[in-house]
Image (cartoon, rainbow, N blue to C red; front, side, top):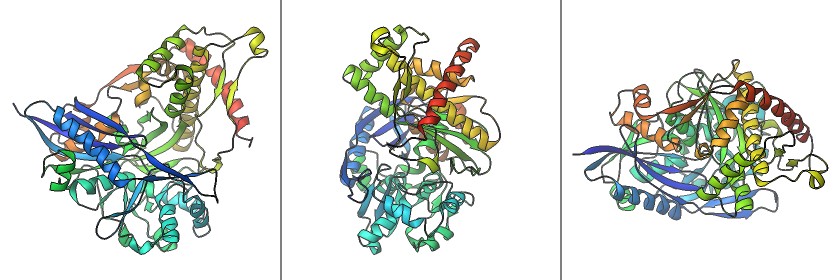
Length: 504
């Protein structure tokens, strides 16, 4: 019997993956490989680094993942659609022939100087009001100015966000979609269109920006060249995908107004869905388009969470694989919860666009005299770190609630760190609201598949697709533990706020 399936390509910051789903949201096959970047420094800004993405190696990685998935599909499977999602802020410049003249991931900070210079032409407050984003240092708007200054700007025929470039590689079509277009800082988030004000103010030709299409609409079909690279049959419909964070929201069932979600991954973006664009008057938060039409998101971000936890696991267990995660969970469960607990300030942050600095201190606080009386074990340190993630998420939720004018009543979470039962339990009690844990951790891929499923006609609407393809389990907070967590959060927050006034 023929079974219809949907294939997604996901280019994250650390790795590329391909996942195939059936029309009920069940994972049929998946494959993943790490990405590798060339890293360099600029003597003008030695504390920031540039990252080059090798276009051929990047596409080869995704191609291998896709071929592996296609080879593992159940007999009789028919691919009825493919769509792509990717890390935000990453972009590619193409020449007229379609060759890459620049490609950089979201980590690429080579254009920090140009980002500072462009604020002399368009004040940062105005940039934020128009684009919903600041500061511009890692965004494509600054990288284009860097390229124009340091190379031949006339080479650039098209600027594509990374997910749009994957769509181009699959179909040969140069198009853009709204959720990732907003990450270029060349886009008016309220008007849902490219910003003539920014383009004219910086003398950037509108012709390099492709036409905008809604996520889930059909972009084209898999070309013969793409079929050879990926194993996906030539002629397979290619649908417009979206940015990974907003796709992850959709994949965890978060698309209705006032729903909130957090992706517990390398970083932890926290977003609430809004019916109209909400621009934070305090200038701390980001505003973006959702992958669902006529929906926006207001975003805060807990910063380096999963990435810092992997580093901590490598220090304590020598690796960050599944065995290390399991050992960490056991160590945390065995650690005694007492008043001697550690306070951790490593990695997680409360988002503040106007106060970003690489020179702020970090560390852990222990009771004195530490080694004479109290000697923390690994579980104490690991628990303190997980607590710091939950405290940062709470602080970010509070910022969103203030800017949006209404509290967050429940939070849906997805991403790799949802595998930690200790983290989910701490988060539930720290927030004091129900937590819904998405069944599929890789919700960005599932969100992309939902878009393709609607585009392919498997489901008539996004609401129908979400109802069929997603599921969550709810965890309720314990009032007694919530009171304890509240006291510790306030102590952690007082130290955190003090550390923000320090520089090294």
